[in-house]
Amino acid sequence: MNVLIAEDDAISQNLLKTNLQQMGYNVATASDGEEAWRIYNTCPTRIVVSDWLMPCLDGLGLLERIRNRPESDYTYFIMLTANVADEQNYVRAMDAGVDDFLSKPLDRTQLKMRLRVAERILQSTSRIKSLENILTICSYTKKINFPDEGWQTIEEFMQRHLGIQVSHGIEPGYYEKVIKPQLEELKAENQ
Image (cartoon, rainbow, N blue to C red):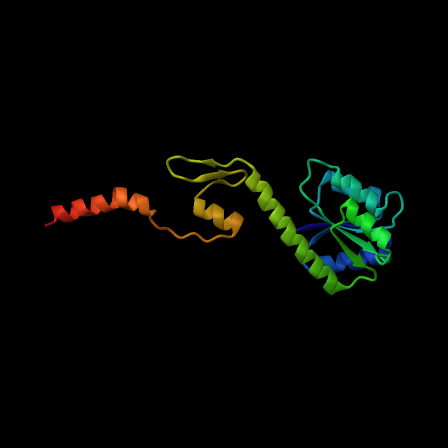
């Protein structure tokens, strides 16, 4: 998964980038909010970790632009700050759409936990968005044509997108109307 870092302090940026790369993330970096916005606007990223106070465009300004970009998938926004304790700023940031906070100096364990939550939320929002689309189901094969994935069985679709294992059975009404008479007919023929 890709992560965009917006951090004006070179040491903090490098530390964050190294930690994210060691965790297996692809990382893009920006030294201020304007540069981060240019990167994001070119290639939207699902996770942004941004310093609050930066030159040119601060973290809240960057967040506002990201939230107002209608054609983007949901972006999980983590704000880096040394002043989360200021309740007014905390409320202001939450109202603006910040998803989570990380205090400076950076704690690797906290970062890892926040990213796990981010991935779960992004996975869920992707599932919801994909399910909002109309699905085409073949009336003969009962396969689903899912955008960008092509035709797949209902079982494959449910496993891949909902994490549900499917078992098969016979609906009781169908069994009574169709299967049972056929079985009785076969039984009578074989006697």
